Length: 382
Length: 159
Image (cartoon, rainbow over all chains, first blue to last red; front, top):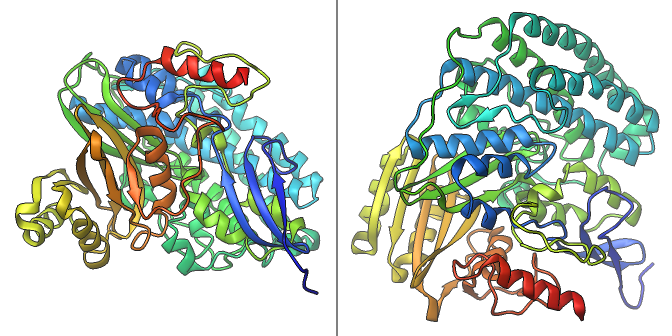
């Protein structure tokens, strides 16, 4: 049945699908979405400007706080960029520790996402289990670094803490437990009819669209395109790690779930391999205070997809320009394509399907988004 | 395509249009072009050399000029950064949405934050800055201090 005119429906910044603020203006014909306009920026904190005003050492703390979930990814990308500018080589042991931390982060981020997508699909039992299991990884983070959310392990020239043989055994034990849990998720998502009905053929992104709109990460790989920075543009110790790049041809939310669950199995394999072959030696070298003039592009595969930083130095102790492009921003054009032609009821699960992280994406404005707070954000607060 | 090859092909095609070209390490190439050659440089890289994935556009303040850096990636994961400088008084570049479908989102970001205009950009509404933000204040310009921006934010909140 056609309607005489379309209706505009605002969705957000505070909205039913996500715990982070974001605004989408949907144009509806009946309950079919015919147009979507995104509006971002509600959690901008002025991090790029703040990075230009901070020394390289201080910038590390800012990079750590770009995102709470991909903190290792952002600090890896930051340290890698600055180390390239400074011309220092990180010791092999530090590269292995960074790799283990990155993969632990992928495990915790993907299990968080499995929980969220199960919740949006109306399957709260899986949500509870996934978040319970994620605790095991958070406890490991606490053992390794002292922090459950922010780890402060990456530093310029290496890592701050070593992984002792006892700690390595604990990680192996947790991996044993987690592997069993991931196999369980795999069985559940493939056989549970409610989950299949809510995710199959929902949020379809054709491979041609995914490529043209430059989607990244599991959103791209869920559309059958095997691209992964870890394999294509290897960084830290990924060139020595055996792993498969997972993709799925479903092009829907189910395919994105499948990709993430299989990636968790690969991550467990990488962690075990790295723990068994960890090179001996120092895990940190001294970094200079200043970086000679230069510029570089640094890329890592964050849990949500390709994360890119650009740094330009001018010989001083502060970067001349620092740019951060988090994976969620790259996925916004593809997300808008997925949202057109769907029913209103599917909006939450499709939004959750790209695993959006808006605090990663928003990072530049010097003002705090919420009007109600009425406070200004100083550089020190950032 | 590796970085040295990309630099060679770009120089071959653009000739005098290239101001500086380097491949500092494997999989990283930087090419700075004249303003007149910018459109041709992007089209050549995207359509003929296969650098079809736009990672981001970085806008930078280079004193009297503004700089836009387009970070493009090809299938072999080589990153080609094409940069161009425009004077602050006439900071306009052509919109590249025709060849790079996702360019608009990064162009809007560069427009708001650094004040580079994009000729042909269809949607010029605020993407990241708050509603009511003055259109001539670009937070990432070097002459904008935290204090300036804080004052503007306070004004906005008073309204």
